[in-house]
Length: 124
Image 1 (cartoon, rainbow, N blue to C red):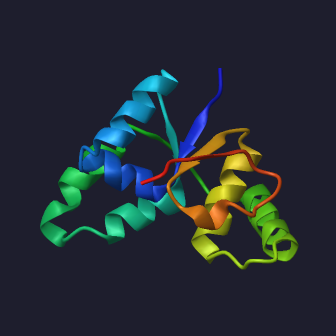
Image 2: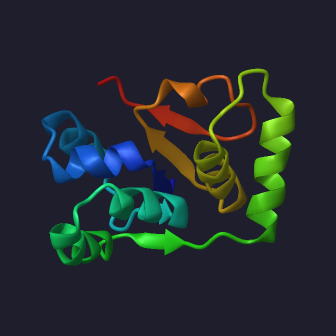
């Protein structure tokens, strides 16, 4: 069974109950999705102070993968090997997926030219 790492945009769409995202996740039939600690940070950074507790409860539904040296090295490799420069956070998210053997689920087309990581794109 394929394991998935959700990009931050998927987390946001899911919270907003986007029907396309809900349908996609149901079709995958995965019981536990993972997220990068970078997505955890991005998600919390995007909420107001009075929403932090609710956001943290939401994020507990996911397996959070911490940043480590292997992921850092993979992110550097991606940074050097891609012609289109990705944002720092996207490099880490992609590197996390690759290092942990997970397929990245995203609506972000910036990952399209990245070689070496399996990506499942959602057209939004």
